[in-house]
Length: 108
View 1 (tube, helix red, strand yellow):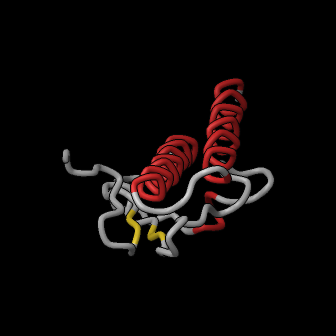
View 2: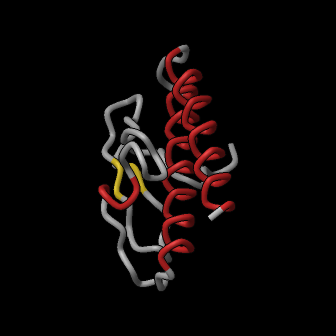
């Protein structure tokens, strides 16, 4: 239980820092970087949920499993360029529908 509280605190601090950073950035490279940060936050929430609930790699969490005042993310993040996020199975990274927005961007 102690680890769960620490994990939620870290996820909340990550969310706050991403939110503050997103508020000051525009589109383009900054938008893609903000989106990648959001995808990392979703991936972290998925991992924490899987560990806390003893889930297998083929399990598929839904938004209500990850988001809420007592869950891993307080509110669902928004892609700064209007893409839609897909959570995906635990063995898959989360994805954004906006072209070029990925959890693992290619080196330029």
